[in-house]
Image 1 (cartoon, each protein chain N blue to C red):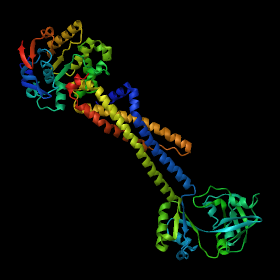
Image 2: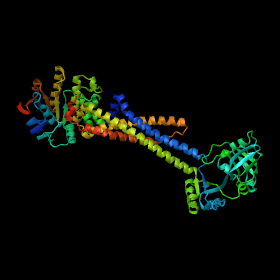
Image 3: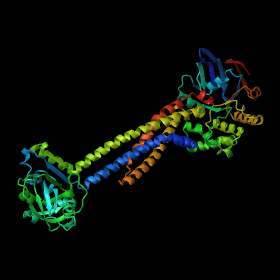
Image 4: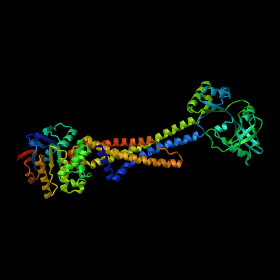
Length: 228
Length: 395
């Protein structure tokens, strides 16, 4: 399962923003390789650049200079449509605030990425039910997000991230909006998914959570300061 | 994906019913007005045409003008000439016309006297209250028989029983001639060119031989054969007459040409009105644009999520465009219903024939879809251009 081939590769990545007349160096010369099947935490205080790094890995953004390879594909210079397709196929997002679509039930939420990938309605439903089974929420699949608890919502979100079988699960403070107990359960779910061979990247400022991951990358002022 | 987008837009419409209805009002009124005006135009044209055509659309009337050079041309012999020269002419009836003083004992009045053929009464759909029409025998015998119109008969015979009595007809420069009343006509709605009720009718031969001295025909009534187009025949006749006496020498008229003219006028008028009504569609479209812009702003977060899940700009654009078109199409359907109700109400009140043309419905629905695409484009473009990171962080 483990191959030496890095699923995420950043080389000398810089991401600068122009705010008024100031140039903000959100990421400054970051090089990084994350291997397939690994469980990595990206940590740092707010303003350290971890959100920027997450956006770049998640193909929501492209670097100012430097190169990023996601599962062998260079994102630099990609058009919006190509980036969207890359997100759809390679990245599964999990957000702190779940970001489910409120007007649709759990099943439809999980089906959404498959719809954009062009699967038939029948295939979509089959795959979505499977993903919901994996997170233990099949009995809740016709419920809308507002009828689910925080932990259940996050499970739906994880199912939605899983369903297209992406190369990376990219989670942004996934336990941040949950109580300790539920957070621990979600963490367990991630560990289980990782043990099944999925690559998980966590973005968090929570030290305790970070140390449950195989590898920690610490960011400060847009640079990697420590790796463990 | 298309079906999902349609479902999404329906659920978006349902979830804010009041807002949807209010924003659709402009489209509903606009489409309703266009549908009502187009269909009422058709109904009005049909009704006008029917009332014109009630005199018979297979008739062409030629009125000679009092031009000295044409006097030799407008004689009774022209009748046979027209039958021979123009295909589709069944028969030509000459009529002569003059104003006469009419007297029965102490009752006096003036009236139009028409010298004509016995078939004139059938042709003009005139029916008899008393007595009957003069016959061909009366014509051949130059008999002094007169048929009275309803009004004229009442003036001369206030107590009825006119048939068999003798009345005197006198031209301005002539002596009174005695005529026997052969019949009285039923009241008939006034025609476009003649007042049947206050006229007196005598055989053409009697008019020509006894009342007047010069055989000057004042009206040729031309009957078109079945299977021939009245307008075509009319054109051939005018072409022939123009080549002989010139177009100033006569006026020609036929219900068929009038029907054509009337429908042209009402058609143009209703198109003009529909164009004005279409302006309210424009206003409605601006309402749609407004509500779509609000919707895009409200759903910025949703757009961000969808983009993170892999929706391309084109997909997002499609979603909002379909939503706008669904909205306007729904408004269009309501508008067609609204317009049909107006059409039913007006046609019932005016006693016109109700028509709802498929083409007017299709035009209205097509136009409302176009409004949706046109005014939905900009909001949809805005949605598709949102930066996914900004949209995701939008609260």
